[in-house]
Image (cartoon, rainbow, N blue to C red; front, side):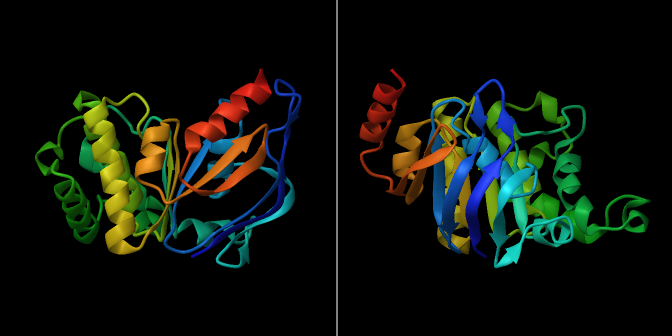
Length: 244
């Protein structure tokens, strides 16, 4: 699946004194691993959320696999997208497996979940947790897990509906170095072994230079660099000088 933005503009922000995104043009091909980078307020998380229809578009359009995103097509498009929210977006009082199963609610009707999730979905949830080495924590309350374990649960939840595109909003924020590396290794493995399109918002330039193959750098709601993940520190030095 491909993602294409054509002259994308979102709502005006009074605090920024400009549209959050303005004149965004880019195309992400099937199987790419892309990092969205930029200073605070650049619009990278807004751009990521726009790919799944969580941001109102003022003008321009977003195409997912050549289908224009709108109110009529968004439900169908979302079936092929998995989103890892910033901070995980998990229900901390629920068990890890319950959080994972919530990821397939959109593909099941009310009757299918009235008496609990079907065995097929529960087996798949256990399989995903086992893939990440935390199947023994399936019935643990999510709030009792470490930050790295919680992020693995969040990834499993995004994967349970077998998406073709995985979106991750700052998945390493708040994690220690080892846990952050483990999360990025999981995303890299999904890209390498399954050919999954992975788009991730990052602040860590070291991570961005190591795992993704392509960087899209935003500044003031516009794309200022789109290319290989090389010399990223130099790109940000220029941004800092511009801001100064």
